[in-house]
Amino acid sequence: MRVLITGSNGQLGSEIKELVTNYKKVDFIFKDLPELDICNFKALQTFIIDHNINAVINCAAYTAVDKAEEESIIATKVNNEGVLNIVNALAKVNGKLIHISTDYVFDGDHFSPYKELDPVSPIGVYGETKRAGELAVINSDIDSVVIRTSWLYSSYGNNFVKTMLRLGSEKENLGVIFDQVGTPTYARDLAKCCLDILAFSKETNINSKGNLYHFSNEGVASWYDFAISIMELGGKNCKINPIQTKDYPTLAKRPQYSVLNKSKIKIDFKIEIPYWRDSLKDCIEKIKN
Image (cartoon, rainbow, N blue to C red; front, top):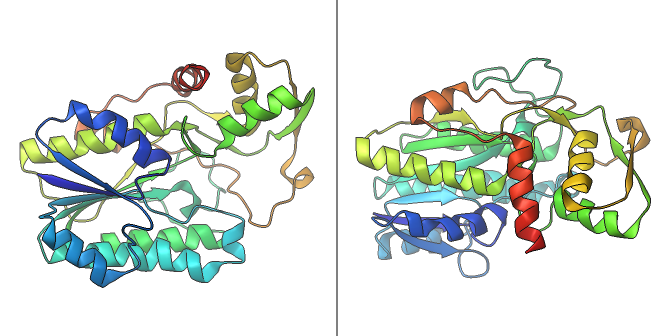
């Protein structure tokens, strides 16, 4: 089996790179811009055919939530058209796709964990373009899995954890939003989930079209709770003060509640999911070292 990881230099792709040594029967190929652009269908299709690719884990995405409000054309190109290019290229070789989506497809007006078939209602360009990408996969005939995740962080790239650790060293006080609730997700745990699904599907010869799943770490937190834990585990003395969303205006609106129900992915793929604080501790230890 030959698996292409697109967007391989991002948080998720970088974590997958570290874990692939545990999956001996699979040949992984890692590509990112400028080497391979998912928005260039001809180049993408040629690469997949020439390298005998059987599956793709698509980690490529436009994720700048606020900038997307001003760069909707670029966001649409990557999050929708690029995904459709992958789908069409894999259709030519009867390949499998694992595609990563987001909690931003929901409006955040729910107050119980979102299930996969709950109504979607994106509240910004980022969520709208990611939903369009989901539909490109779900409405296709290829063997595919879409995984929605939330509040992703890693020892790689730029993310909330690394920003808080930096600010914790620079400031004595910091205001962080307490009225947006979700679940932090360690990209390493999501990477393992993607690889386990790939291995599970290969071993059981399961072929699924447009299966939709949710994955985040276990538990619930506000951004305030998240920041408090980062400072504590990171050994920072910065005091975190709770503020409301209205006190920190952003270009794009955020879902106020985006906790995901993970029952389906745990049952179907026999996956165990770590508690968010345990994974956060592992990530911070890795950053320290």
